Image 1 (cartoon, each protein chain N blue to C red):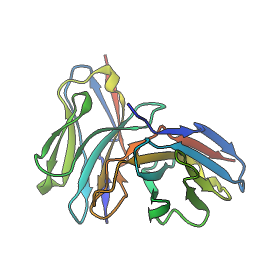
Image 2 (cartoon, rainbow over the protein chains, first blue to last red; image 1 turned 180 degrees about the vertical axis):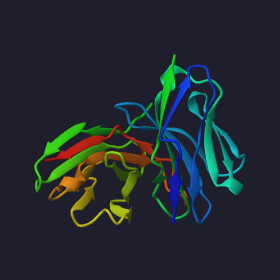
Image 3 (cartoon, helix red, strand yellow; image 1 turned 90 degrees about the horizontal axis):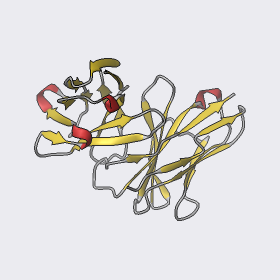
Length: 113
Length: 116
């Protein structure tokens, strides 16, 4: 079955620390991978996406993600977290001949000063 | 930067009533979507819409649901007879084009539907 797993429900980091949010997917065909962020009261904002090519992709707000086919993972990273990064982060997967995004359950990031 | 907008931000209704949730997609986008998120659960795909017809729908999108593009700017989701389990956040999204795979979708802020 097609699915996305985000193993960490809640992560707390100090401002300035590095961050890695995990995402594993199960998808029978070529995956198209996305990370979205949701701040309170806001919609889902696209951070970055991977369709093909270089497996390390850069996004907005200093985020990057690495696609590892062998591990079925698409982890999100940031070298130095800012207090404004506190939000909920969603990983999602799509594919060929489908409009549907399949989402993970999300990871809530809390940032301490 | 263009955004997807949704109204209302919060809708409260009685069980059995009809509700219409409204969305204004990004103006040059051609594909439109509805997703929902029940509290504490994953964001789930409901339906996609292109060229005035449903492109794809999930098993959740049964006969109680319908979508429409009544004019050149709005995209609506109608729930004919609401149930308690329809209480959720409903997200509208749009994308520029269909490129043979799941396209980059831009989401609105959501409408929180509460069914009493």
